[in-house]
Length: 384
Image (cartoon, rainbow, N blue to C red):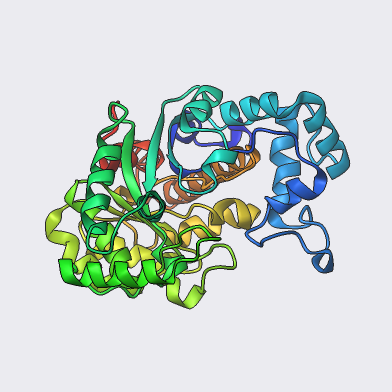
């Protein structure tokens, strides 16, 4: 949406992208580009071009002008211009156009092939922070060598070390239990014997020719409690994702008992993505004081329907409990799309409320500030 059509308070926001990933530091073929426009493992010739999706049309509408092309430039023209500018300039332009005030980067997925938080921060012209992926840390501990009985202690030591490194650059942790074991996690903290037994099963099943992969309900729960003990806000992948996820096992309602059990600690838990369970996530954010939510990933995938998605998410989610995130991965375009579609959706929602006398202009500005940046600053204790 052009800046002139946005509510001024929304247009002026320096968004905090509280959940995002690195981008690919190389030029991409058409096949490589399209593969990153989908949560599928690759684009399928049976389904046609990924430019013929909500996300694909959004790229042509909103990203083309950032690369000095007319709106709705054809895919071939867009990709040729992308190659002409080079990946570094494309990344810089699109991240700057997103208007970010800070980035909280999940570094646990293919970190060696993507830009680091520092490199993203430089491209965006905004501070970069790190979100530790708990399973990735645990897998590194196992690959470095440990026993079943020694695993818990080694993981605690390593997470504590990482959380304290980098002068406050680590601001949270993330669990991908939804992908590995589902979200029906028991509420109680596992005991040392239970952890050792689960670690023993994991180590016994490990193959020397394959990377370690944690997929045990007890261990996922142990990782979460360890992060909470350190005061790290914990993000959970919820709902929509790549083909590894069984969607019915990624419903946030399955976390209810764990959320109830962890409420007394007062450490934030953030439900990521949530689609198509964004209404369930809104309920949980309303009834549990430490629970927050977002609609990342879905925003750019639903394209022009972003307004409907955000409105549904905010039916129950308190305005002080929803955070902005793009969940951009691989393509810098997804940073810009997340921002522009979110701004348009939020402006539309707030303008409707103003027209119906549901809130004042001052209220609308305050709501925009909370969702766009203030809530994330509070959850992750960011400066500013």
